[in-house]
Image (cartoon, rainbow, N blue to C red; front, top):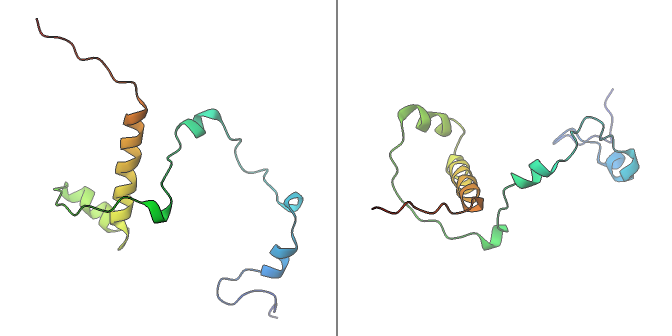
Length: 102
């Protein structure tokens, strides 16, 4: 027997979701939010404010290129996201003074 309230496209019962309140949502399986989670968060600019992309050629180890290439056509965005996250982590660190040469 088919439930007519369930969307055929994604199998979601939108009527039931619309009727839910915040109190109906079970968050018991979610881990508590910690300060460390917020400290490691990556803040992305809004989609309409992103920097223009620069096209360049990068030589990657074959296994690294295969790993990201196997993610599908959007793998460039994944690599960009990971590089941005690394950049933001580095920018958070205090600048280390360079040792002077004698």
